[in-house]
Length: 183
Image (cartoon, rainbow, N blue to C red; front, side, top):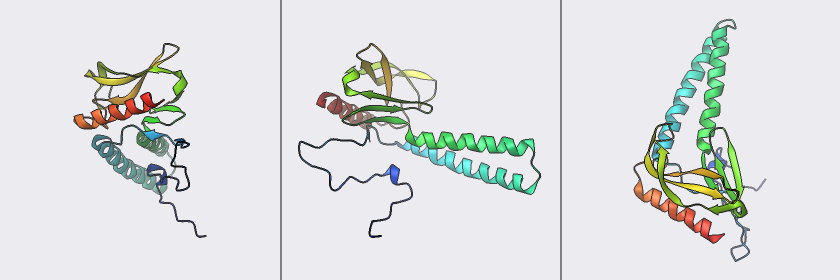
């Protein structure tokens, strides 16, 4: 009864554990995002959420006021798909912990331990523009694994989190290098 109440979206702003060790025995168990959500991603997700709520509300009212039709099922399918995409949009990103690296994309999650990582330099390459399939010249951190595979991360100069924010991209690269070199 005396425990503090959790906020509704507690997973977006987790609190540090007050009883965790603060000495050399500390282990970062919870994954930390390398790049915070940027203004382009937040704007897109907020607009998408507003559009989804409006569309879902309209489809729900139409479905309740008329008998079940193909249009009602189509509206429900579109709303469910939009909900999944919006929720995954909040999760997309690259996170690190003392155990390894987690790369969340819209439809997939890759977890790699630090022992599997050979290197992860920031390379000049063609990168997606704001996450779209349109490729433009830019810089991106690409993981090179010990088995020879290369896994692109979400730390790139034209990502929705870092677009038009050169200092934020440099800070993300520095944060990444600190984690990579600390292992």
